[in-house]
Length: 513
Image 1 (cartoon, rainbow, N blue to C red):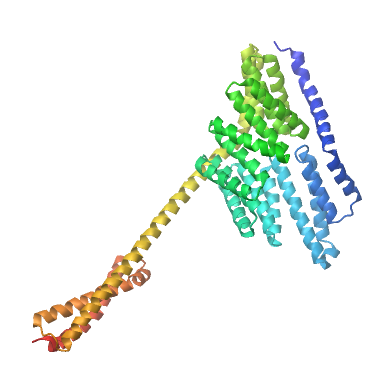
Image 2: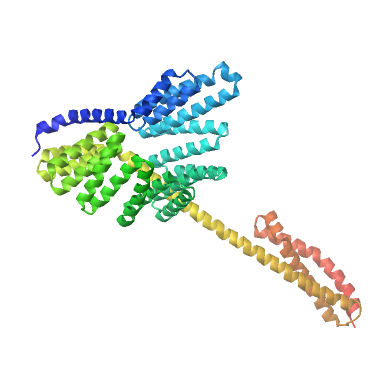
């Protein structure tokens, strides 16, 4: 049975532990951070300081996004101040650097606010960065902003907007020949199709991304894309393929030192082993991933792995250890504002206390789960609506594309048929004309009835030939209206009729015996 004393003192101990770990992780990366801090202190109020502030903000964004936001704001204000200065008015080079500094600051702030879950603010900053980059003609910068916007829209559940951003970025990168970014865009498009349940399309884009990554030997892209394919198979419960692609991604991520990705993959591999009740193997993955996450100060991964370890202990009946890890994960999730994790962990704790017979705590955490779940219901519902809307729009696009292809095919058949008719009619008219020439010059004499038939047949062929020849133009003039088409056909017939009468009288004189 868990004592009340243990439960009540846990938040204080957990906060103390988090502070200690944060300090450790800060010291771990102290060299780079200290260097940037020293540069910032020595920097003049110029674009170099703007760049250094942005670099430091970027370095701290996972461990302390609030500080990153403050530094990003400072960089933005300084860049804007430089742009408005008298010196910049006279120096086009400085003006361009200041604009680039503003764009970079907005880009960083967009990312930092995304990490905080402030999606509308994030979109606002990314749009500002995109507009500046568009104005100065930086297609590469535009691509970066589009990619970031795609990520934020995806987080919002606005999958169509996200897909459009990634497709625009892909077009820009294709024009530039930036294969690294092409591979990234292909993987991002694949991730959207995966969200929409279009697994075949998703896999197709992921494989294209890997092919480009292999072509340019870009291991960063390959590691991330292998991990994405692993996720695709993991969420469809195909653990054999998921394990294979996670392992491929893990190998490359370790080789290039991408430890955030390493920790994520280790967490996912642990989850696969846990789902098969291979708890010893799962714990090895979780312990290793947790160690790396603490070193990085990545509390999102820490919360996830710690919660997973708690669930394993719960499944094994080790309620004391399960409680310890689940409470630890819950506290971290609260600290970083991850409501979805708070909801899931509250549910897991409620089930744990119910198993251990502490129904009072089980009820309290169940209430906490319901309350938290209600607060994130709208966000989840919004994402679900976005997913359905995106699926509908994609279906409509596919349908329209299919109809367009069918219409194109019909047009090609119509054109081919018309071409054949013109050729056949022309040949027949030529033969008839040859026959008429032969008759006119007196080589052949025919009866009056036969002469009428020949002239009628010749002009009938001419009439059909003119209809086929003029059909596209008549369609354009009449907009496909049958009554108008009939009117034009009647005009053609009326014009031919007197000519036919004249030639019939003339030819009869020449042709009749």
